[in-house]
Length: 331
Image (tube, rainbow, N blue to C red; front, top):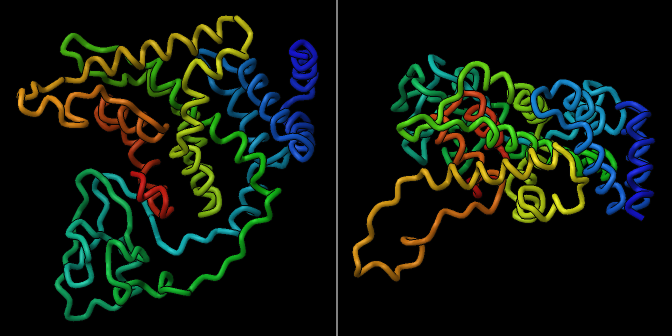
């Protein structure tokens, strides 16, 4: 049975990205489990330990079920149900903070949302961001609805849910893209003598392509953001894809060894975390003496974000997803 699947995957790979994606999409309509096996083996064979160019081309067609990526983006954006702005900015961006409307002291909104709302007589200020942030307009957990701009008032948008087939391939493939991104973060780890981890320009190039793809997907609106957030936060995805459980069904080749060694490098990085001494009286307190255990891709990515001293690409990607309610609660 395994050999038959291997042979079939060989044939699928020879079809090229577009027609292979169409073929797997048809399989998905018949059997989810078989489509998962095909995608798993196909992407394993396509993995390049040094260059992600070809793999990203395949990802784009697979996510879009064989359609052109930007045509697919236009279709998905029709179902953008995000009622919050969520604009992400980096350092030196000019934004506003209104203490009258803010529910939290760190609330901030972009200039467009500020000027499209009424803050007459309010206690507000304009500031230049030092590290970056995201616009909270439309988020009831960050500000009062009376301060929302005209584009993000409650009930402004009424969007239908996307048809199930539209994002079916994305739901299958995006977790693998997230895993690929985590693989890159693991394999780039080269600790310095003081135990810190820094990304050189060469290292950044090695994860930029997959990072850019995730960023492009997050710009497809609320429907796709939800798929990404589920991939990041679902413990089952993390358990299967990031452990040896998924590796058992893969062929014994250099790419499998590459993935296996990434697990070792991840655990080695965990051991570099400083462990504070715990008073004897608190030794039995839950959590204080436990080794750090990640249960989702989001948790591990945030770990690497800290270890690599907050790379801008990772920060802006994670901030861009804050318009998803479940993701915000998880993060």
